[in-house]
Length: 370
Image 1: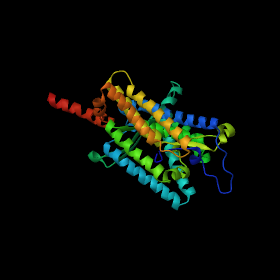
Image 2: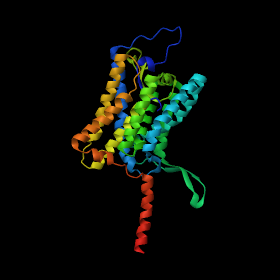
Image 3: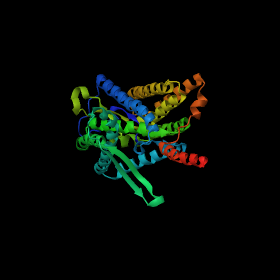
Image 4: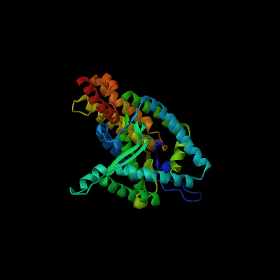
């Protein structure tokens, strides 16, 4: 997720080796298909991830609890992302690209299987017969004993989840062996959807801090240096969605890719998901801010692709996405006179805290009775 920039086909595709002929330019049809597919693939995890984030916020299952991003986290994120990006750049310059990508492939192989399994689990549940022998399991790691015992890992799953894990492992092996772009995209979509679902901003101000900081980060690393593009071309991991511009000519063996970093999906996506939860908190049975920000995202991404096509240069997508995703909903709030409500909205306590509070309430009640 450290590479949130959209690139044209020449930047995204593997650079031709010395002495090999340059790739023929993509046809208008191929480019339209590639860019249209990237936009569609970006919209799917944002839309469904936002819907799932609502139920995730209410979940009492510790394995599905969201991770809340505070204003301090948001302020530090661009710095951490910059250090990570620069570190990867130096690694690729100093060490063998082949061995680094081998280690990264193994790392993302494990993460991708878990993310894809979590993504398809709700859908797969519809295909299991009613009499399916579904057993419950719990993976629990604790530290200490007695009153000082602390949970490190508490993951609950069942037989259906194991089946989803097995199916996801097939995709994982396919990706590990072939690095095929379809397997890459399946993992990329899973990472994006999980990110939008499980990463929650605690309020709109935090979202503005996060998007504003990454706006500067993206512009600097794409326009100010060649670091972002170099890492994107060298990094063989499902941290980006890709689609071939020569699919119509070469079929599934196509290799001239346009690509979009997962950061361009997840970062605006968690802000859009926050606005959906804000819509629900208003209890007006409308999703005005969600749909407004969703349309704003389409507009921003379309503008990115248009500028990239005109200037034939990698573009920092957040340069266009951030003003659109913040500006459009803010204009709607101004028109409806709900700016105060928008910025005063605060995410309720996490399920973990709520569960702790619910355990304390009977105790307080019993004290009053006494």
